[in-house]
Image 1 (cartoon, rainbow, N blue to C red):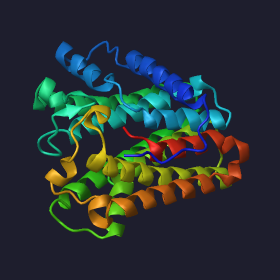
Image 2 (image 1 turned 90 degrees about the vertical axis):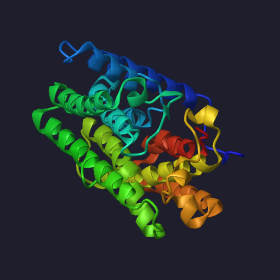
Image 3 (image 1 turned 45 degrees about the vertical axis):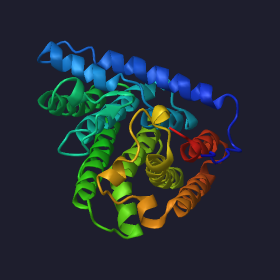
Image 4 (image 1 turned 45 degrees about the horizontal axis):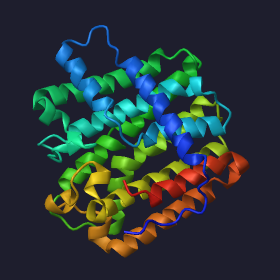
Length: 304
């Protein structure tokens, strides 16, 4: 497979991504140093799931959006960690036999395989609770802004977003969906938390309601859908060694995806169109949108 070329990528960009990943890893280590986790086994399983590597796209979006708008990294640490804790909880639960029934995640046994199903359920529960504890306990923003950030994350994770999207996904198994229905499912299951990550970064930077905030929300929406379409494509033609999980899972579970609905080429075209729309949405930000433009190209050209 030949990756879509990225004319926007500069030599410093991969290093910047690595720095963000390293920073959020340190924050996750900090927040997962729990004084009373219930049992050592639960704490160990939480750390196993959350510190197992990964793309860390969502915290990267928090950091990159916030920094582009003038926030310090210290202002962005708590929301970046919180959104990743929500993401990891969703992965642990998605991997369960009652959901996607996956054996590998990030090149290692999934949480319920490494431990057991009951522990994996509790790990997801505890990570979700910890995410909101992290945001609520962050003294950097004002109390009013803290409440708004908590609301934004809850909205992205709830029935209007990730949880609702997973319910749509489960109900759609074995069915033929329209393109519009697939996009709605993807916007909820994956896109909402990506859009929420952008919003958290903007809120942490003190961005008021207005054109820049609306531009960022549109960017997040478009890039979130593009990310999931690229995931669908990689499940068909990606390299399992790079992905850290088996490919072909969607087809094996009779799940409707973008490629199964319109074909691989039209799926690629749609991902690139969404990338271009996301970049265009950043116009009101001017030069402040340069890093996010690079990230948009990275999301669609990635091979893992």
